[in-house]
Image (cartoon, rainbow, N blue to C red; front, side, top):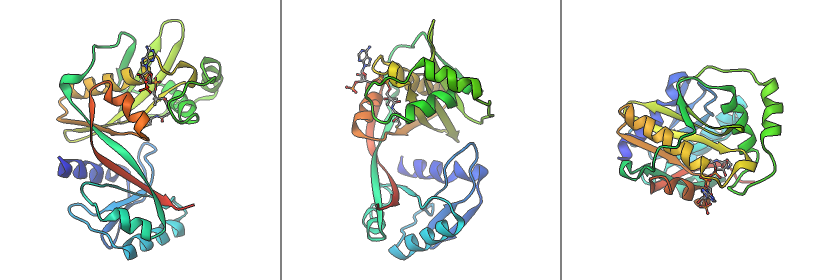
Amino acid sequence: MWNVLEAFYDSVPRAGARVEEHGELVLFLQAGDGYPYYARPRFPGGDPSVEDVLEVRARQRELGVPEALEWVHETTPGLLAVARQAGMEVLEAPLLVLDPEKLPERHPHVRVLGTRPVEVTVVAELAFGSPGTDAGTVGVEERDAALAAAVPTSTRHRHAVADLPGEGVLAVGTAQRAGDVVEIAGIGTLPAARRRGLGGAVTAELARDALERGAELVFLSAGSLEIARVYERVGFRRAGTACIASPAS
Ligand SMILES: CC(C)(COP(=O)(O)OP(=O)(O)OC[C@H]1O[C@@H](n2cnc3c(N)ncnc32)[C@H](O)[C@@H]1OP(=O)(O)O)[C@@H](O)C(=O)NCCC(=O)NCCS
């Protein structure tokens, strides 16, 4: 499974990226669909050194892009210590894979689309503006104000919206595919609509859609253990750790 995942991580950014090699690291330098810039171990089998990390960070600074490095711990276990030695702090994000038999019942108000409704951008921005899983006050009023100024964007991905009668779009998410592998990302629920099962439902419907379209492996990474619980409730199980490194503060 890890090789399949590595191939996915290596191929997704290449769709819209210029690529540079720095020792055992590959630096992706242009993003399709707003995908962030970062460096990863060379695929297959890169085993980066402290010097490689320092070199790629210097190049990222020179280019004015974030000093970001990402990898899967199970594939490149040595990089955790190496990145820290090179002055980075590392978020160890739970990486979860779908157990298709554990998907819950279909949710009546979640739709999956091959277009990107403006609500996806607006609701995701408001959701990620209030990190964590706690409910909050930001809700439909703020969403509608932001929608008035929003501009539609095109997409290569699948998007899900939880669109509740009388309330509109309250939760969103996105799935991107390479080969037979689908990654779910950008799951967000308006703070005032949290803890009603909508984040889980959007995730589950994107996963079901991926399976119906022939995906062999559906995975995601969660920003924290508490967020991982949302995904575990709808059929995902912890398989490993996605590491995301940024300069230590
Ligand atoms: C993470 C996030 C998407 C979860 O959205 P959500 O709609 O609140 O998710 P759910 O309602 O499915 O699950 C949240 C909690 O509500 C609980 N819940 C689900 N349905 C419920 C219901 N009907 N009544 C009461 N609680 C319920 C769940 O069990 C879960 O509890 P837990 O945190 O104790 O495990 C949301 O908090 C968010 O947008 N956070 C900021 C952005 C972010 O970090 N996104 C994830 C990036 S990896």
